[in-house]
Image (cartoon, rainbow, N blue to C red):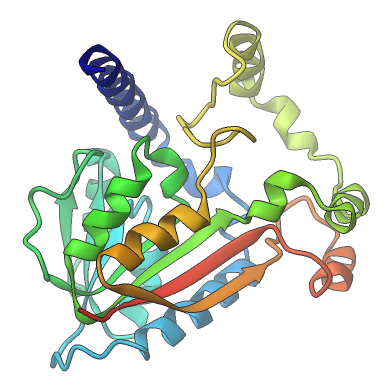
Length: 276
């Protein structure tokens, strides 16, 4: 058992190290590589969801402090600042943190270096709101990080988890499959990116290789919402809002997307409140 645990820790550490290395290299290109995030439809949805979550905070603090876990290029950070919060932007990538410092200079912001395994450098009950977006699938022991998020959240505070696939996405849904077939257009630009060919070659030798170090990206290895609910319930948190939505991607036909928006979904966000 000890040997198995040791091997798992070594594997996790190796994955975390690679994830850090990858993101330190692509930090300037991150936004251009993710049109599914940086588009007006998703940004409008996200802004509304975060504002809603902030209105549910009940910590009686004069000024709310939010933790942006895995801040990247500052997607959540920007929205949190816009709704008047003091933000601590945290990431494993030093290059992303430097980008944040430059991009939001003069704003109510601090940066924090994470180690990818725990929040040992963060005191318990430090934040009114703890947010994470499109990050859990990069973390080997994501359930422990969820527990850490609860620990550093104040009583009456909010945990906001967003941009993670629903269980239905992994199980397959005939309406969603029909949507993908009709909505997708050919993204010719990807054929001009050399790294895409390198990724294809590497996947011949390792089918689980991901160009950005994603860890939970396969049907037998992804985040499970029922386990997240269980962990957070055990530490005194309650899910107070659940919302499934259809993510808009850059290569989708907008009219097709809008026609399917209320018929199927592939992403989820949940809001949890700390009761004790």
